[in-house]
Image (cartoon, rainbow, N blue to C red; front, top):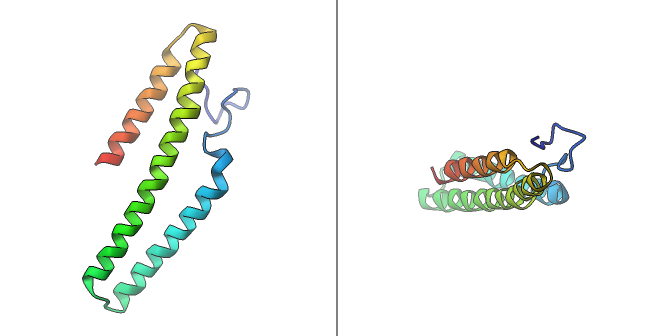
Length: 110
């Protein structure tokens, strides 16, 4: 049995980041403002190196959000699946969550 956010009866019904949701939303709104600032810089024909510096800052901020979400997935979803496997005796849920994490890491590295 795999626990997901879509399974209201499961112990892992909420995403791992739920406790930090407000902080993630605040960070994402700040990043959104940075991106709008970059667009303004381009509209105003700012120096290309200055624009690139801001793009790098946005990339770093998004990377930090990604790493936080990945950590939450591992500590909540993967660990939850491991606990479930102890009860059920099946490692299928653990394998699925590890594969999800591995795929997410692969996407982040592209």
